[in-house]
Image (cartoon, rainbow, N blue to C red; front, side, top):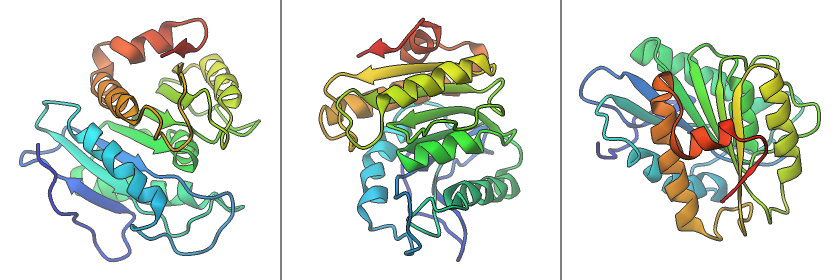
Length: 234
């Protein structure tokens, strides 16, 4: 597959970056980070969405399947806010995807605030798996709708913005709720995924490939993480 020009309706939450020539059999949606609070309009040239472009390319290169639709979730606001705005935007994007391509398995790849939104949005029946990158997982974040979902978390052990310890606790609770969940601690990794940046991108490509084949069983890094007793160090 090759990345093509974005196809987006005015006001839409779904930005389609690559649509297969044949009917889509699966989709990968990328969710960028943001702020705890902020009603400023989210723009595609802000640093958080721009940081996800190489992640998007890694996801694009992750599979030799020709039936995967690749897209981004476009937020209305830069912040999470009291109303969990990115979750509502992701729900709209999933509805738009459903109208565009029908019911199909979806993998959500989210960074920071986008990781939190992706994990919340996993309640949608189309979402089969979540790859959360340095996610914001505050104490008490709900896990009750994750049963049957595959969740892989990659978190840098030098992250000073979001807490890898909270990610570990979240994964533990997600397992108790019935999810296949695992945590990979990226040694020396920071929140922006710039230290060992190439390794982050290779890990994204590898895990996305494995999650696209989740129905036949998790393998590779994703399988190792979900099968380990505690966090993997990588």
